[in-house]
Figure 1 (cartoon, helix red, strand yellow):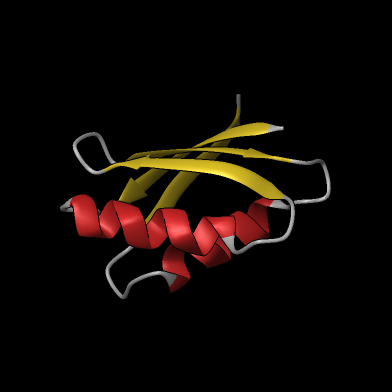
Figure 2 (spheres, helix red, strand yellow):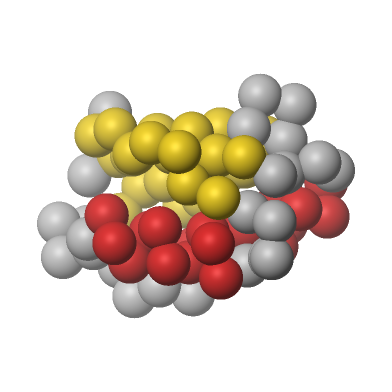
Length: 73
């Protein structure tokens, strides 16, 4: 599965790295790429990963990070 996550609160490369690291720690996530310039994260994962797990990982990576929308790509 591939997801595109629209976010809020990513301001720099450090923010990107924090979100990517949090997502990669979710079992089943194989790739994550965050872009603070457009506040979008792309994720590759297997079918066992839920949208709630992705939301929890992004929002848990920093106090100001919010998930606005998740779309299967």
